[in-house]
Length: 120
Image: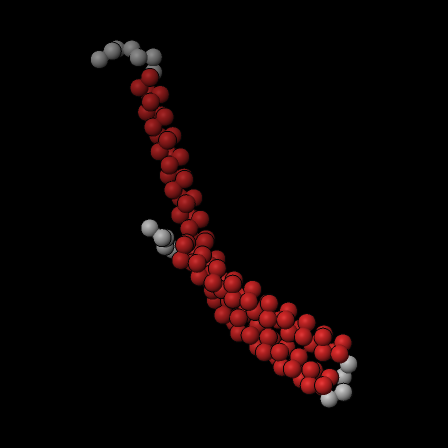
C-alpha cells in the first residue's frame, strides 16, 4: 500500500458520505411528496361526491325550469327571451355537472397513481 496518497482515501470517504447524505435527502423528499399527494387526493375525494350531488340537483332544477319556461312560452304567458335564458342556464348547469364528474374521475386516477398504481 502506498504510504502517502495525498489525502485521496480521505477525500473518497468524504465524497461517499456526502453522496449518501444526498441520496437520503432525495429519498425523504420523495416520501414526503408521496404522502402529500395521497393526503391531497383523499381530501378532495371527501368532498367531490357532495359536489357531484349538488351539481346534479342544480342541473335537474335548471332543466325543470327550462321545461316549464318553454311550456309558459307555448301557452303565450312568457316571452321567448325568458325561455332562451332558462335553456342557457340549463345548458350551463349541465356543462358544470360534466366538469365536476370529470374532476371526480381525475381524482380517482390521481389517488390510484399516488398510491403506486400503474399500467405495468
